[in-house]
Length: 180
Length: 180
Ligand SMILES: [Zn+2]
Ligand SMILES: [Zn+2]
Image 1 (cartoon, chains in turn cyan, yellow):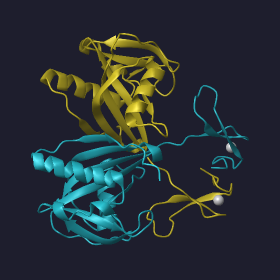
Image 2: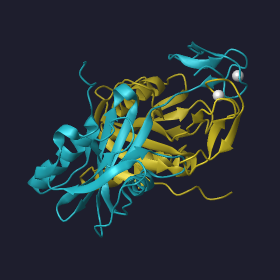
Image 3: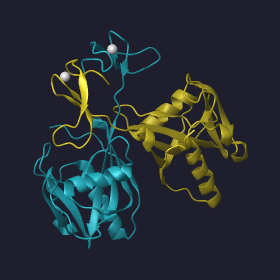
Image 4: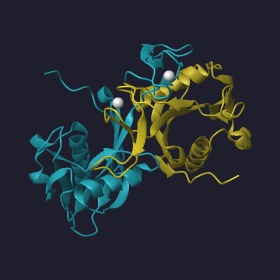
């Protein structure tokens, strides 16, 4: 950022008094602009043993598969956000079961939270940001074409828990991606 | 906010094309400024059956008691943030046990995450934003002087789980505060 949201003056990166981090501080009015991690919420929805994935119709990762998820909005709960994103991307209205994964994606300062959910009917369709929405058996999951590591991790946890016969909550810290 | 962070031009509240929410959109360059919920992280630390609380030395809720917690920073995990805040406010370095509560505080667009933790030694002291740090038995908890409902809810879950002999993860949605 280059300009102050309060007065429009130029900002500089400085450590404010009593702080220990660099912040964007207004050169004119002194307003301090804090940046904070963002929360992404979504669902892993099941129907008759299959899980619902969306093929992305937008960048990044155009054409790859993901669980429906997106940035949480002001004034909603994590659960409400997860359901909203599922409707926007997959035109589906599942019933939430439980918060399933909470994934720190630290190198981009995001927290991804995926809920386990069940479709009550097999009604879904590609939303504006999706090319296609499909149900996948475990054996059909396109592991090499999953858009994000957090979504692949959530799918792995799901199939492992299901094989064990017990679902649990999984807090996960993703390491930085490998260089290259 | 009044001015664009990219060009310093004035912003207006508008619904951008393809969006369904009001956003701060720059009248000059079209930059869209998204606001998102913020994450607060902290700890409930135990030592010999007691829990550690901090008496707030800053507004809001100056003089009331709380668990050490604060806004998550860019580039850290939720666990790292919880430990950092505990050190800043209580000069303590507990060992984290588990994520214990995840509380949607929707009317202020915050998510509070509290970790259960254990002190390895009874070393703590008031940090810059605290007046006092103390260990409390369950019977001593100043329930009428707890600064935030999310912290009271976390303490209640803790003592209930402890009485039952089993700790579990608690996702909670706080209702809006009562008027008045
Ligand atoms: Zn300014
Ligand atoms: Zn602009």
